[in-house]
Amino acid sequence: MATGYDTFGNVEDVKSMILVKYAGAIAEELIFGYYHMGSFLGDNSDFKSATELIKGYITMINSEMSKTLLDKELESQLIDISKAFYQESKELLSSNIKLVEHLSSVLTDREELTTEEVVAIINDFKDKEENTNPTNS
Image (cartoon, rainbow, N blue to C red; front, top):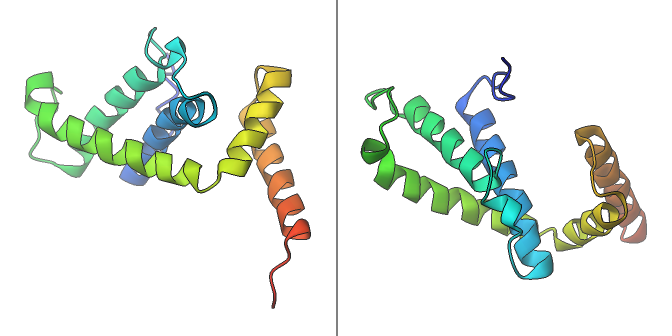
């Protein structure tokens, strides 16, 4: 059974996946001032998924760590990494708030987007921004 996590190959891929998991909740916080319940509840919630990925990340970066992923054993590292990655994701989104707001408005109309659609929207947005604000060469 495919989990969606079986295509990453290295620790940076896992980190990127964690940042993406946090990004959805952070975008809600930045745009609406609160998290939607889906960020916390359910088997596929953003925070639960991020936590499971962080457990794997810890074992990838520390070969001495038990591979049994015992919560007590991972607790302090999990909290520290979670806070750091959450902050990194928040800074990235905050520095791109216009794009986040644009994606939010598209999602208001469409409710759901594929990865390919999101990439196309981001690329179109960046192209329009570059054409509106050309850099001096």
